[in-house]
Length: 199
Ligand SMILES: [Zn+2]
Image 1: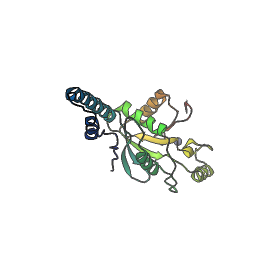
Image 2: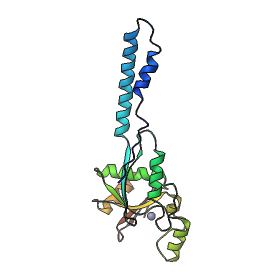
Image 3: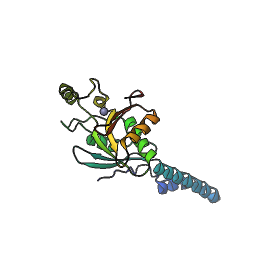
Image 4: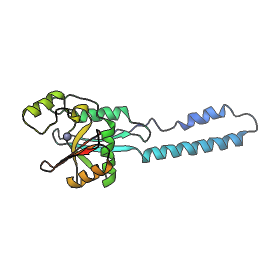
């Protein structure tokens, strides 16, 4: 499993001290030092809160049997390289087509994981679905919408390991962040970042 952590938010404190010292003029060292200490405290606090609020997800793909642990948001911004990694992981497993997965959909999963606590792993049944795959499934008479949000990278069919799927559905509905479908027989929940609706 590869973990991607962005290190771009760690402030370059030594560089800031140097920059500050350029403005030090005779007799004002104490005041400048005090300001620098305050600045350093402020920056270290920002970094700490960024670490607390970073968003991490764990995936296991039921078709490719691959796993992924990824920090996709550093507390301030989405991390492009991490999103790209997720897009590849959640590509159309039937033909390898890749499309951007809506970060709002990832956030729904993150909220669900936070709700149940722990480092829950989402088992992926289906995520991005290319128009070709969608048409093929429809032709086979599968329960697939003609304009499925899977084709827009906004929907994920999943279950959360060690959590009853009915409970996952209830929690997803309570979030009111998009569509939630419950597929009891196949034991998964469809979540998407589209309109709030349930089935
Ligand atoms: Zn679905």
